[in-house]
Amino acid sequence: MGRIALTGTASLLGGRLLRRLAETKGPDRLLVVDVAPPPAALAVRHRAVDLTAPAADQRLLDVLREEQVESVLHFAFFTSPRRDTVHTHELESIGTLAVLAAAAAAGVGRVVMRSFTAVYGARGQNPAFLTEDRPLQPDPATAWARDKLEAEQHAASFSRRYPDLKVAVLRFAPLIGPGVHTFYTRILDRRVVPLLMGYDPLVQMLHPDDALGAAEAAVDRPVAGPFNVVPLRPIPLLTALHLAGKIPLPVPHPLAYPAVDLMWAAGVGEAPGRFCDYVRFPFVADGERARRELGFSARHASRDALLAYIGYRHPQARARAAEAPA
Image 1: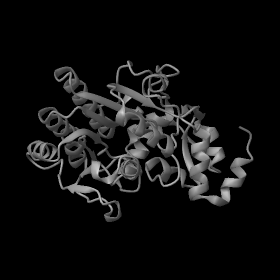
Image 2: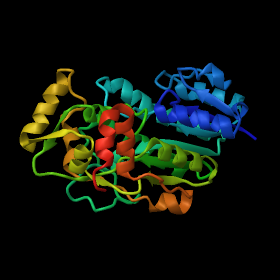
Image 3: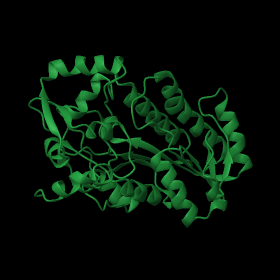
Image 4: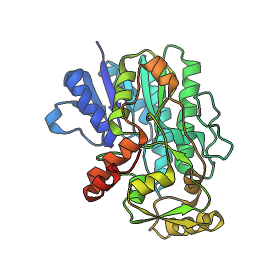
């Protein structure tokens, strides 16, 4: 039985998946392929590979062959936008290309790759629930989403060229819950939260335990293609802010985009201006395919995930939010 290699184990989800697999599969079957080593207490093998380095694909190919890897779990993606867009592109787009090329050349049977429902793009004409066959149309000016779109395009290309390589892409809704630190949670940590005047889209908030459950389900199942990993029920954005005890500050959308861009350029914003689309328009995904083919069903609704995060970061507000009608 071959090894399972993991990238991106320094992230919250990647680290939790590593710990869970160490319990269920045993540390001897696991291999961390990353710049950062795993916790020593896990006693998991580690091979240092920088996916942004030149010839990373050859280095990774050698590692996969030497370690007799049968599956790769590729989770090396940033959950928040970064100002160093060149490095991000090298890691997420070019790095994914290296992972897929090495996996195909080494005869690896499966790749499970992390992605995000944000790759659909937030648009006013989006249907109520986006299915996996919907075209991926994020704003091309949003580098954070564009790099993830390119990673998915690489995955689709390799799936066509190498039919024996099963590539499963897990499109996670935004994570909210204990331990999560992203630009979404940093915005929620503010007392006053700007909101686009006249817009109140449905949003999905995925509990990290549900994200972990979906990743575990994908490890052993011979499935391929994209899968939306989403919570039980979405929640209106304004309702979420009220539950979190925040004060919404309505801002006209023509002013919001340049103002957010200025804050981002000044180093005090959480995201570039085009991210306003994601609080203006819906990008709610349908989870039926994951239920049918992965056997995965979320246990938490968006409200549950939000309340879990409030209890983790703002326990004084948790009791007030829990008393609010569902």
